[in-house]
Amino acid sequence: MLDHPAMSLASACAQSLFKRDNASQALGMRLLSVAPGAARLGMSVREDMLQGHGTCHGGFLFALADSAFALACNTYDEATVAIGCSIDYIAPARLGDTLTADCIEQSRSGRTGNYDVRIENQHGVLIALFHGKSYKVRGPVLAQENPNE
Image 1 (cartoon, helix red, strand yellow):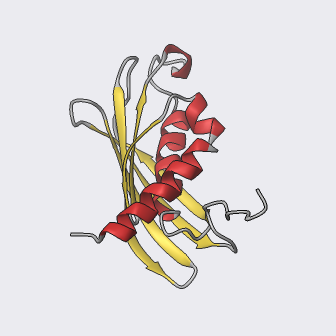
Image 2: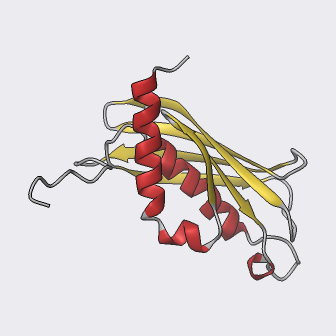
Image 3: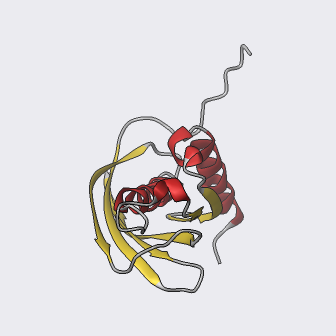
């Protein structure tokens, strides 16, 4: 079982980052859970997310996976960005589907990390697989307290 301080830090980092993430919020993403090196997001497929074939545009699936990846790799209060990502689309997501993106850290060493995201619909059908590589930049995720405020 993970220790309480690590879980508390991961939660604080994810909530802080998600609160500032206007793009993910505009797409209706929901932060479902977080742990050190892991995050779970949900998103419902809306009509404005459909492409010409009537299924969810791959860009929205990529955005969901990328947002889960971003939250997972920033759970240690060390500002981290993506340096590479790829996605494989497995099955179509359809209007009204409720998607869940589960991101799990596979490795983290030095300044880089590797993360895998699995997107499934409400029936547990695999929709997409995403892999992201992270790079730790300078600074924290959480805003530093200003003693003068």
